[in-house]
Image (cartoon, rainbow, N blue to C red; front, side, top):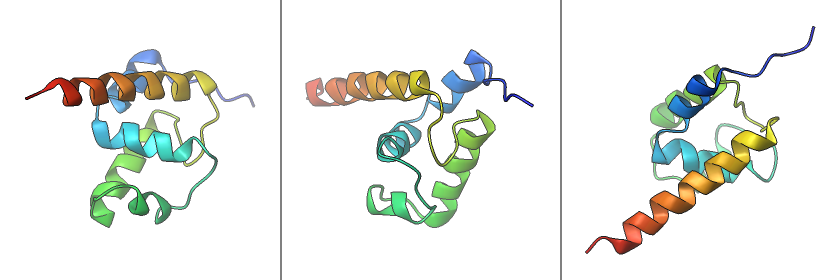
Amino acid sequence: MVNEPAPPDDILRALANIHRLRILRALGDGALRVSDPQAHLPLPRSALSQHLTRLRDAEIDYRIVDDGALTLARALLKVVERQGEQRP
C-alpha cells in the first residue's frame, strides 16, 4: 500500500507554529528521537510530544519523507525569523 501525502491544508496547519517549524529544522538532518529536539528547543517534554504528534498527524513524522514539506518549513521559518529581527 502506498502512503498518500497529507492534504495541503493539514500540512499548513501543522506548520503554523514556530516551535513545529524549529522541530522540522532539527529533523532536516535525519530521523530524531523525541529527546533529541529538546536540545534545540526550550520546551517541556509534554509540549514537545504534543508538537510531534501534530506533525505526525500531518504525516510529517520523526523523519521527513516529503522534501517539499521540509522546503516549505525552512522558507516559513526564514520569514518568521526575519520578521522577528525587524521588530523593535
